[in-house]
Image 1: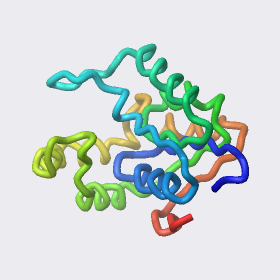
Image 2 (image 1 turned 180 degrees about the vertical axis):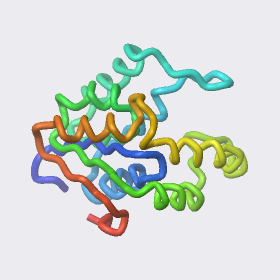
Image 3 (image 1 turned 45 degrees about the vertical axis):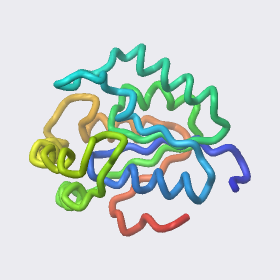
Length: 168
């Protein structure tokens, strides 16, 4: 159990280990968990981003209903909405090659895909997305994540390797 109410934001590239670390924190510190992928998209085919105010309302509802939590994702615009309530941020600044390897070895994510096969059909697109991290100029980009990290004035940690992630 935590000695104070932890409210943690985890962000980084796809495949960087955000969900793995979040799950470790959920299990070891009894934190509620919000994966921003579950609120950032409308249930359409093809998927479309949900309006920012709709996602923001869901983040506020989650934060208001939990004493201690971890929120993880790559959406800097959504992370900024939660940042004034967090006690710490963690930047998963992991090498692209490691992110790709992690994506290839990713377990089935049933909250995102109807089957492991459906998830694997998306793998080529995901790898292209991971490879473009440093060259993009959007709210999912390396530069945007780095700026968010550098400008945050509270407690912050920057992981450069998944091997530093151990049971807490």
